[in-house]
Amino acid sequence: MKKIFVFIVIIIFVIPVYTASAQEKQEIRDLMEKVKNLESQMEKIGEETEARRKLIITKEETVEREKEILTSVDKEEYTVEKKKSIGMTYNISYGYSAADRLVLDVHDVVEGAHEYNHSMTHSISVSYGLLDNLTVNTGVPFVYRYYKTGASGSKDVTGIGDMSFGMSWQPIKRTKGGLSTTFSGSVTLPTGRSPYKINPNTEISTGNGLYSISTGLNLSKPIDPLIVYGGLSYSRSFNFNVKDLHLNVGDFVLEEVEPGDSIGFKMGMAYALSYRASINLGFNYSYGLSTTYHYSGHTKETPIGTSASFSIGTGWKITPKTTISVGLGISLIGGDDFTLSVGIPFTF
Image (cartoon, rainbow, N blue to C red):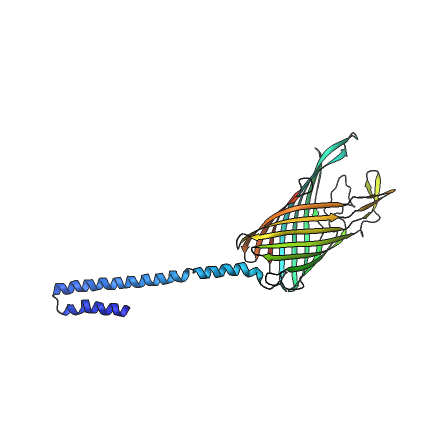
């Protein structure tokens, strides 16, 4: 096309130069110079247009990328930590609970008092992929608790909480659109301040004071555009370190504690608002069997306890490997208890 254009210019302007006057020849030369400038500008415009075309993502490419993102969860893969990879999560949470109870004032008069319990927990969890479907993990919490009763009585404590060691095993890969099944187990050690080895009138604990073993089953399934999940858990505590106690509780001495087992259930769903943001809703329920307290001269058994909570959270992907999660848990069985947490994971 360019050659044809030049050939036409030669026929129109160059040939008449040999038959034209000096003035006409000068006008023709000026005109040819303008044509060359115009041709140069047209080449530049063509190059710029081609560069813009290469930078613009076509509609087909956009649809293909969206399809890639939406179907990425359908790949056959394991969902636990990959083999030889290390994951670390920093979590900070604030918990609040309140209740009314009867207490004795300085004149030994029984009166109602409102008690408040605030807790701030910083925890660091580290996981390591032994195999593509087997991950081991450990968690270390650092706890600050503040407790206040009535108008004057208050106490606080800062220290390490109960450490835990666990593992997660996924027997089979998650198939496209199929169910993901993960089994988990953990052991909790009473490394925090035990509630059975302090003066309850002046001190508060940072741990449960018990050894415990927990097992669980977690299920999840993508149902575009949702991911639904559910799980069961069972926990048993052992009183290895709460025998032969001599803890004064009122007019009695606590000598031994036989903790009860607990069973938990959870269910919920997550929805992807975009490639970088998601929202999740959940329900948690726990059923605790009776705990028996052996005092000097008599035995007391606590009633069976239940707890339930509703949780809502969101996740924000700030890098391909890092998603900040924020969650709020609200008690559904009496009181105005709640927990607010923020988690930041890292993968190496």
